Structure formats: structure tokens, C-alpha cells
Length: 522
Image 1: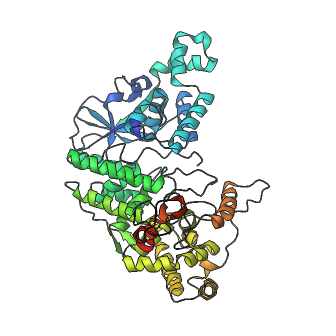
Image 2: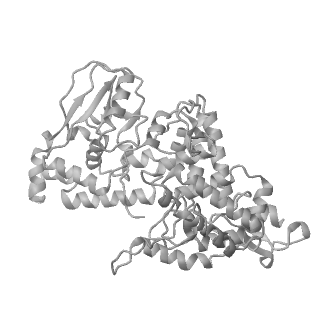
Image 3: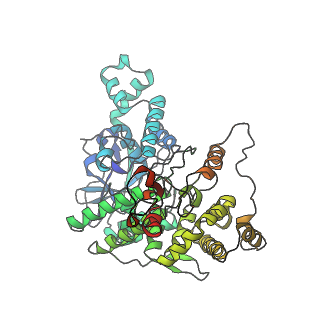
């Protein structure tokens, strides 16, 4: 996956805003040398525990901020609030974190980040860090280069030596929120953060419902149970349980790691586990599975705003268990797993993950019982052939809009195709009928080719589409149901069942979906 954003979330510690702000002498600016690991300022810096991840800037943006600072160009002041011994960054966390990253040489892969994420650093995060470090080194040089230049100016680049001579008093401007308690400080945070890079609607819900089981579950999954432990108010046993299930659920969704352009069918169930869109997707998934949503006037599913606070962690544990059970069912080695191939069900023909397609399938099957799963298995081969031929189900978001706008139509499409197949209709007959209906025609009719770049060079999407087009039809299939097999959703089964005297020999072995192995075949 191409490098996108730099994760600087570890560099300023999180803390609860509950402590009352205190009067004290304010400083008008922050010295960059005070940001060193043992500097006078850095140990006191905090950001609100509910603040979104500091992981929205590209490598170029981080490098540009550092360069801008060192050129002594204008950088907007950071806004601070004092609470006891802590100094909270109400606005400017990204700016300040970029400078801290430079001082610490930690762009998401350094000492502080490795400790914060318990060495659980994704390939995407690592690549973004490496790219940022390379850009900074090429444009301005590292902080260590500047410190060395103070003692050995003759060995440094001229511009580095010149900056090093003044770096001790180069500062970041600061403004303070005065005479404010916790509530006023929090309101200031939300008001200020509606300017610049605004907090989107889903992110606002996550922040406002931050103590609910839905938000805590999403946070635990998002970082694989590492990073800031939003659930640390619970007992140690519950904390351990939440962390462990968060890590397991992350693995179910996001491993093996996704790379682009796609050159393997071993793609993860939930796309890339890194980036600003991941947390809203996981939050929606958790809410959908745990029915923490309601229908609006247009019968679209929307997340409830009044998600209750989880006082003990028990609700969060239940939420994670339910989420894990559904992901087990979708694609895993668990006995319940259908082993749905993500590249067919949840990725566009270009190889781009489509969250709406996964959420729609979760909604489709969330109330199924065993007879319905068995009925699906009986028509699965034809259903997957239909999806392979008509890829419109992964274009629904682009056609209808994201989230709840596209999901009802896509669920209705799935139900219609499955019902027609179960009635014995052929794939071609179903396609012909749907192609003549206004509500479903775009699922069938080929869309304009969005993969034509108009250039002689192949785009990344075209390269991914070329691989999927050639590889997916020839993927291995389950001998029981005829559906495609995926790396994460297959087991070795017996050709002759054990109950009939089948042995564990190689000749009697075959790869199956876990559900077929446990329910259908044996």
C-alpha cells in the first residue's frame, strides 16, 4: 500500500481532562529544545484522551511543517490549557507532534512509538515513517545533525550549521485557554476543531460516545489492543480481555497486510488496517453487529447518538465477542466460517477495499440461522459466479453514496439474487431480469471504465484489476460447495468422513471451507 499518513499518536501522552485547570504563569512560546525527551516542557505535555489519533498528515506535510519552522516562516500558534502539572494541547497537536517527531527522530517507528504500540507497528506505518525521515533528511536534515553542528560546524552542511547556531531560541508560539474548567476546555476543543481539518460526523460520534462499548471496542480493534488503553478504568482482568480480543479481531480483519497494486489473492478481509478511514469503518461494523443503530425516516441505518457508558467493561467484552463471532463466520479458520473470499465479495475490480460491501453482507446474514447458512451453501457456487460476472455490487458506494445510503439497496440485491437462485433460476436469467429493473440495473450493466488513465502507463488500479481479472476465476474452490477458497478461510477435510471410517491419509484429504467441513461434509 502506498504511504499515506504518518502516525504520530504516541508522541504526546493522553490524559483525562477531569483535573481542574489551575492558574499559573503562562509562557508565550515553546522552545524546540524543550521538546527533547528530558526537556523541561515535553514531560508535561498531554492531549485529551478522547482526541482523535494524530495520524492524518502525509509524509510531505510533516516534512513541510518541520521545514517551515526551521525557515522561521509563520506557523499558527498552538492552544494550551493547564490542568495541575499537565499542559493539554487543545489545538495544534499535529503541528507540535511533527516537531517532536523531528526532535526524537520518531515518525511512528521510533523508541516512543514502539513502546506505545508494544512493537505492533504495521508495514504501512513503518513505510510512512521511513518516507518521512527520508524527506526530512533531504530537505533540512535531522535534529541530531543540527545538534552535532553546534560542536562541529565545520563538518556540517552550511545551512544546517547556520540553523544550529540559532536553534536554542527558536520557538513555537502559544496561546492559553484561561479560567476554564474541564467542560469549558472540552467545548473549546470541539469548537476549535471544526476549523481546519474538521472532525467528520462519524468521528464526532466516536468522540462523544467515547466511554460506550461501541467506541471502546472500535478503539481496541483499531490498534490491535495496543496504544492508548481507553479501557484502563476497568479491572486488570477485563483490560487484558479487551486487549486480547482487540488484537484477535484486528488480525481477523486486517491480516495478511494489504499491498498495492494487488499481486496476490491473499487479501485481508477488511482492507488496510491503517489510515484515517479505518476507525470510522470499524466503529460502523461494531455498531451494526451489536445493533447499536436505528432506522431513519428513509429506512437507512444510522448510529444511535445516545450510546450508554460502559461502567465495568462487561458491555465492551460482549461487543468484542459478538464482533469476533461475525468475523469468524465471514472468513476465518473457525468451524463456523463460510470462508468468503474477500477479493470477490468486498473488493472492487481494481483491488480497492469497499467497506460498504462488507457491511452490507454483515447486515444480510446477521439474523440467519443454520438452515439459512445451509441454503446459502447450496447455491453458493452459482452466487459467486454471478458476482464474478457482474461486479456492480462493489460499485454500489460509488453509485449510491457511502455508508447507510448504499447498504439497503445492496442488501436487497443480495437477497434477490439468492432467492432467485434458490428457486432454480439460472445466472443468466437473473441477470437479464435485474438488468431491466431500474433499481438494480446498474448492478448488471457494465459501467464506464474508470481504470483507463488516458496514459500509456498503467495506473495502480489498472495493475490491480489486471491481476484480479486473471487470478480470481482460477482460484481454488471448495469441493463441497464449489465456492472460492481463501487463505484465511480453509481447512483440511476428509474426502471420506471420519464417521464413515475415513483416515487421515493424504489421499483422503481435501481443502474445504470450515463450515462445509464441520456442517456439510461430516
